Image (cartoon, rainbow, N blue to C red; front, side):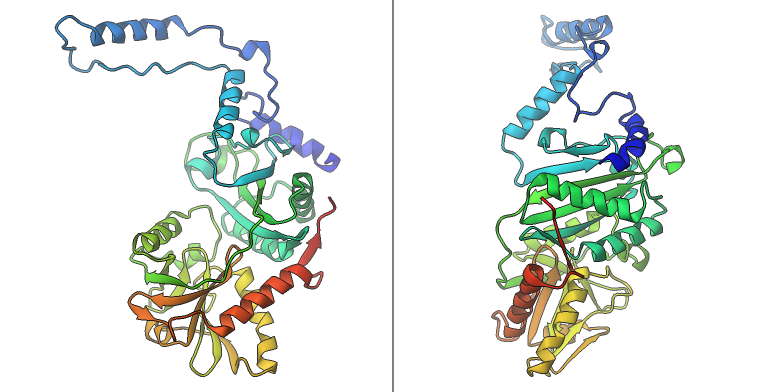
Length: 392
């Protein structure tokens, strides 16, 4: 990645508040090693210990009775513990490679896949992200997702660390280094590290991160239940932007699961169907019209828009009578023949029950299955406009 060397060198100066080298390097300068705990810390431990073991069993007010012996770790010891954490198997996904503009390169060591805690994306949510599927050694709709990514960055007032072509090259090279042929690419743009203030004025350079996740199994288009979410929907200004502030989304997903469903469904401020927790919603009316809510108040789903384009094939053989995007009432949605969730992680997932209402026959519908097959075929053999070959 020679074309990034100058920028990477500049970015490397922003690793952490302590200006230490990146964890990814795992080379510790002697001056950074901690030989022993400071005398003040030892005196504190001794005082706490005396209070905890006093003869009468009582400690003065405000004294810590049961001390936790927190070790003071050197940089190399932190790296070892991160290795142990990775080896413990607590992670449910396999991370194949990560790029960070902070250390200016790619690592395939999951223990080194870290970001600075003073990055404003971490403590202020000032960042945006996007994704792209990896299928049979090709990146699916990366160009389309990247366009949305850059639009979100502009809306969030995050300057680009590199131009578009360089960002595209970084993402492709990260997937190439990962050797992953089926999975997903996720990437973030932050105003960067610098301090713990609210304003980003102290952040001297934005930061780009990307990670490749191995996912050997394909999604299954099995039917699911959804509920109407009680979590307030995002305002349109933030709903159309793919920012890292996904707490409302996460709570909507959890609420759905707590009620025996797959996710929750948001309604907009006028009571019309909006979207799912991180997916779009589609319906097939009794007149065989494919219907989706308008994108002016919700995230413009790349997969949903591609499904709308591919669905035109079903107009030719009579599977569908029409395709439209407009306001959809809850009553109309629940009365539909079919309902489906659409997103890059699930592709097309049929909904067979919404709240206490069965959708259609209460079974997966034929249109949802055909749309799932169309998008899967497009991922495997679609035109160059939606597939980029990864040069492993």
